[in-house]
Structures are given as structure tokens and as C-alpha cells.
Length: 291
Image 1 (cartoon, rainbow, N blue to C red):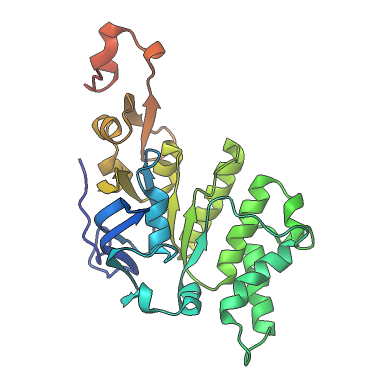
Image 2: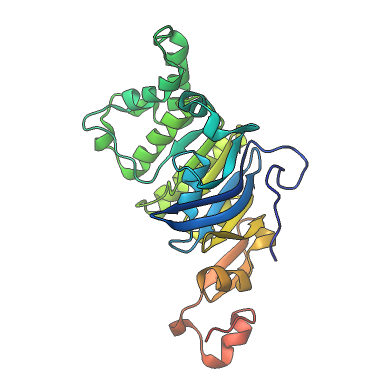
């Protein structure tokens, strides 16, 4: 069912990955949320971390980005221990969009995106025409150039997410970590944001997402990391990972897995108690019986 993945190697090939966790343990208040975890992020694909609430998804993403320091183990970025790198150097290589970011009141779109250039500024190197060009390209790539003069807090949820992604692009990195970028968005705007993420992937970016919507995760990802209780339960392409048995184990979810009529991916059909007769249980849940 699961596709094993060795930290430091790319999914489906021998290319060395850019970002990996090795024997990482992370916790809060003396309680381990992630324990002795190994994982590697394949280059130039969309990797999505999924799992039930509290399983450690966001903790893993925050650890990979160096926002959280592991009590044991290490995170490796481009062959270097990320803990030994300067914050400025990490920001030049890795862009992080946390959950539900909030811009200062009245800050314009252009000013927020320009903040992505801060890692490239110093006393000796102030704002330049090159910085302006990078910001202009980031605004154009995310489709928000026409919003440049508007306050961020006056935008819709979907527009705001595009603007925040634009800011991470302005850092000049092709490695993006996005923590639940579709939170609070309706389905149409969630699809719009993930279409943008896919466009960035097609342009050569490596993207790591945390998502709650399983079917969107399956539809947009080439690599899934399935977590349970701070450990990796399975990792690999959605076709190799998503089964009714795994959904039961990871989420306690009764579901039928069918072929997606739109793409070459599995489609998850959740089944509640009200949706199936007892005599249909085995047939319609692909031999998964709960209770």
C-alpha cells in the first residue's frame, strides 16, 4: 500500500532532494508531537502532507522551515544543516506561507510583496531596479498586478492568498512551503489558489503543502505524505497510496475509492452511516468494515 521514501533521495529517482528531515523529534511542553521522523521532499513536484487533526502536519512543515527547532535530529537544506544557516540565507532559499497570515492594516499589495525582498537587502545593498523587477514578476505570475495599489485587508480571501504567495515568490526562491493555503476559502477560490500552485510547479518550483481536503490533495499532488500520530504512515504518488484501508487507518474514515473521471487519480467518496445499508457494507466500502 505505502511507498517507502528514504530521506535524501528523490521520489521515483536518484536525484538528491533539496529538503529533508533526518531522525527529527519535535514537541511542545515536553510532549513529542513528531518522534524520530525521516522524510525527504522530492524536487520540482507538489508534495502534500495530509492526516487527521493533531497528527503533526503543520508541526512537520514548521520544522522543515526552521520555525521549530527539533529536540533531536536535523533538517537538511541543499546539503546543509538548516540550524547552522543564517536566517537571511534560509529565506533566500525557502519561502514559507504560514496559516492565516495577517497584513498590517492599510498595507498595499505592492508593499507587502516588496517585503519578500528583505532577505536580499543590507546596509550595503538597498532597494534596486532588480528588486523592483522581481516584485513586478511576482505580481504578474500570481495574477495580482492589477491589485498592486489596493490595501491587502480590502481583498477577498482568494485574492489575499494570491498576494501572500506573490510575496514568497518575491524572495527569489523556488522552494515554497504553504501551510493550509486554502483555509477559509470556498471551493471555487480553493481551486483557483491550487491552480496557481500548479502553475508555479510547472515553472520549476518545488512546493510542499498542508491540506485538509483529501480530494484536492490527491488531484493536485504528485507526492503525498500521510501522517498519523506524529509518524509517516505512507508516502508516494496518490495512485499508489490512497486506498480504502489507508483512509480507515489514517482518518477512521469509511470510504469508497474510485477512478477520478477528470484525471488519472483516485477519487475518495466518503460514506457516512446514513449513506449505506448494512447489507451493502462490504461491497460499497471495498471490504472496509468499521466497528
